[in-house]
Length: 94
Image 1 (cartoon, one colour):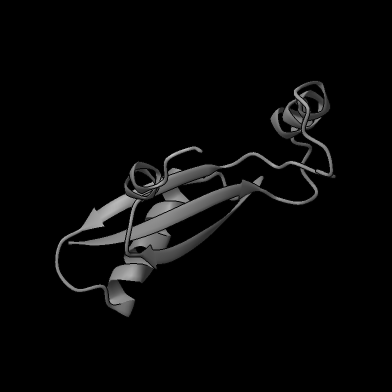
Image 2 (spheres, one colour):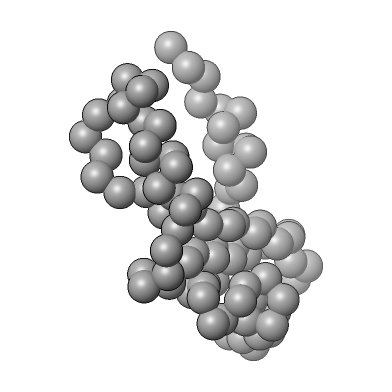
């Protein structure tokens, strides 16, 4: 099975109160050097068969019609080999 990821983010001109809240909390938690935070959504879709241009077009339609609100959000569709969960399982904090 192949994995297609849809990343959904607020459009640049849209205010992002969740991102601003995270940005405000960072210094209190000891993190410095971050100048902006935007919070979005990530969807990982397991797709049967080969990923073709046609499959990606169908997923883009899904992203525009269901996974995002095109009035206030942009989306990006791309193919990935590993999920975030798989990568996180391989990386152990020091």
